[in-house]
Length: 113
Length: 114
Image (cartoon, rainbow over all chains, first blue to last red; front, side, top):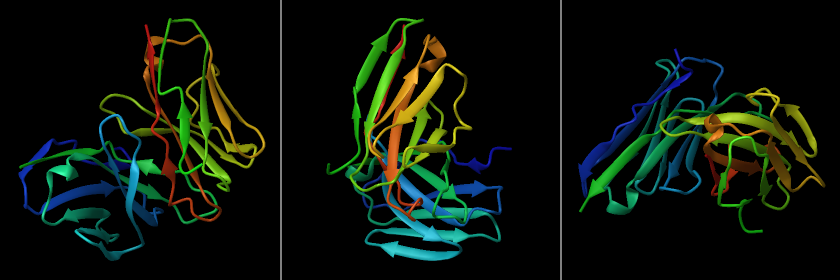
């Protein structure tokens, strides 16, 4: 079992839809949970990060972490064609001084006008 | 600079040749990471630098891969005797002290070994 599992998609939705992207993980030592957005032929761009369990909201984006289920989600409200990209979840352990990020494989999202 | 800069953007090389990939991190970022992204795969960790030291090289796939960082800034990833399986996008990221969860990535170097 991989440490981080993420459905590769593609996930196709119409403009304005609510999108739910998810990852599961197996390592209970993960404490920081990140979502990156990656456009084609570009580097990943940090969208949001959450520490431990709970929710975090930033504009149209909401990140949720359920450590008891080892399950994290990213919700996108009022999705736009410009949201079409690959979304990568990433996780890190307790130390902020040094922690490599463990990534999911990414979910490709396509938002049609 | 304003962001993490990587060069070249694209590199095509013949099997068996050596290549050097360069990363210029954000000014003041002490941590620097190299990752590899292959088609259909997630990001694979290669090596981490803190300053000029590399406390974690555990992700380097073979002894053909090496990296160095000088002046706590620019890093070079070298692949010797390239193989076709080395074809991938090589991504560099940097983060400020104490913020390993907020890594900023460059645009990557797309390496194609023919």
